[in-house]
Length: 218
Image (tube, rainbow, N blue to C red; front, side):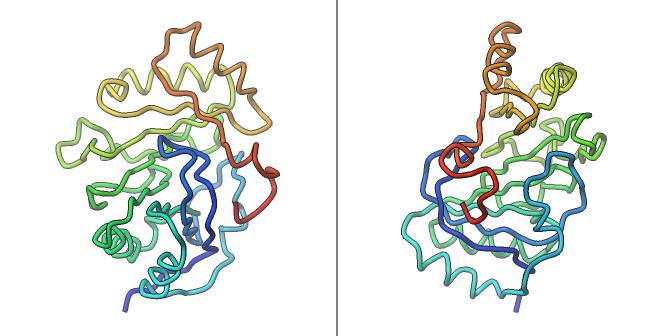
């Protein structure tokens, strides 16, 4: 039986991605291979308990709605994540995966919406991106793929814009620019996107506006 180390499972409003606003069951895995400077889930580095895929599916089914988000930590560090996502898709759930992009995503079920967080230089995890996760790789599916950049500075903004243009992300996928919490103002980033004629989609963390930025389980 497949098991995963899980930090928490909770039912809330999706605060990010193109599915923002939907009631969603969040499954947060334990463990991460990166240490981003702006990380707001450091408690997921080690805390957690081992859960079976069956028990996780049963908990998902106890909630209403059809959206499930597998997040972390870094879910792809645990092989059983693939089985969990596949089985949820088989049951008709709309599944999204939030991943750092540092691990290969080509084996992710194509029905899953991949939210790939490309780490900018000021994240503290620069050069961690796995190049197989680009549209230029014929084994990588751009279907249901969104690329997210957390912007910490003006240098990050231009780096992210250049990365997206160089790899033709704007033409083939949804590209999200998100202001790093308490580092970059959303209004500043919005103005920057407009002034530079950048086709990125501005993303704020809706859950931090609804609840406190430090509240867990939301």
